[in-house]
Length: 410
Image (cartoon, rainbow, N blue to C red; front, side):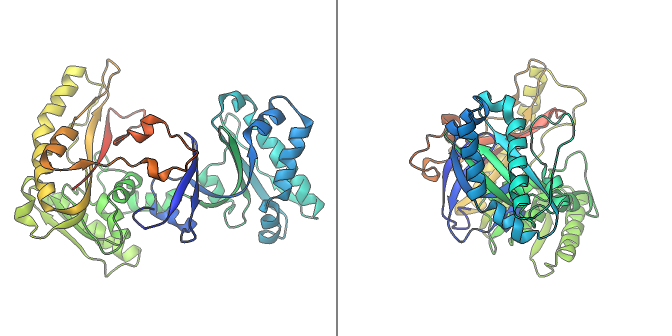
């Protein structure tokens, strides 16, 4: 959003959701350009979380009436009546970070669902309240369920987001579409299942570089072109480099497929064979943005010992150090680099990563801290861990080597 000059201010932030005031240039359709956001809701009204606690922990009838009246007086019900004149299904998802309220999350979900169904019936509208499969830990609809039931188009999902001081009632206006990312992954002509970065993470990295239409974008370890694909869809002029000739041909084929499928035949893309430790010999002009994932090490069958994990890191350190020097030479002043380094699980339980920051800063880069104080409202005191975070880790439970993503600026 900063890259798009969209003015915003975060007014609440939790591990489950964040709330922001955003200017009129914002469109929910931006979710197609994001990798990490699952749902976007438009806040209809706010309730004090203290009232929510009184209503559902203390079973206060007065507080329950306040919650019900807040729902009735919001625009949520009116939007449902207009968008779905006939009988329809609606859903309620509760996002709750307050431990004291965990035990009553499903009670809140049923209360809101029954209240909304009663109000709709009072207007002569029949409706069905969407339930959940047994065993679901939290009362939340998945983005796939929302898509399949057309709840966004019918304005028929209510988000009940319980913050520390304030609880918001919202209508879902956009959800992440996993099928598009899946198409760009398993639907493309050439795949590399073991080593390929997921398209969602590739898009997050592209966004971290402030990549916008018309900028030049480079992936110097492009593989089969996953990161290049996302940059191309962001409107950039993309260049890929890889030492492996098979990867070069695969990336070219995948990019041509993407241009045809997404109707962007005029998009500029070039893939070259070459050593990314000697980039300046291949590319003669400065680049606006770089995002890349170099070699992360061998495909491990078992969780390694700490000593073996350290050995893997040491074996790859020179590759990363040489690349950082070349990246600094070729990047424009103010340009950004998003770089993946290996993050290895060990038998001791202490992961081993690559300390790349010292080398990057010695070359001339400065670290980018995404969550600066300026993005938060005056009433928000963000957790220090958030403010000090200069990298983030993507690692599934089954993975033995994860990805630590760093962002640097020239």
